[in-house]
Amino acid sequence: MSAPAANPLPSHDDALTHVELNWIEKRIENWIRFGRIAHDRIIDRRRRVVSFRPGAIFAFVRWAANDYGTVSSRIDIMRAVAPGESLTTVPFVRPGGEILLQIEGWPKVSQVLAAIDATDAADVDPCDAAPDHWRHVGNRIAAGHQPRPYTLERHRAWLKRREIEG
Image (cartoon, rainbow, N blue to C red):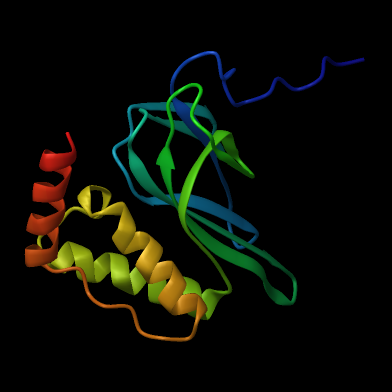
């Protein structure tokens, strides 16, 4: 009898947030759209675990299909939390994080991806954008409205606010 497979996610005794990425072509595709990865561990050719430091903002995309087409698609933009901070659990994310945006359904997920691209086009790294912007994008898309673009002026205001708040 073979031994049970080891859990690919590290224990949450460290201060990092670990995200398991799976890739089975045309079946399951989990990937990070943006975020500063602190550690990357390859488990096998279909699985790896990426880790983020507390405070890091990242986008985690999950897509699954069967013989008839897409079954599920979603994007979560999260902030990695420090030990002891409150968090929300999300599949494949250990221990969890602060959810800034959570969207399901490919049409809405593609709108979020377009908002991320627009932030990139404004010369702002999406992981440096104000967390409130990602909440705004999620709320507007969920309500069926177009989110306001993230501009360099909004980013400068966010940086000043963060500087003042310390």
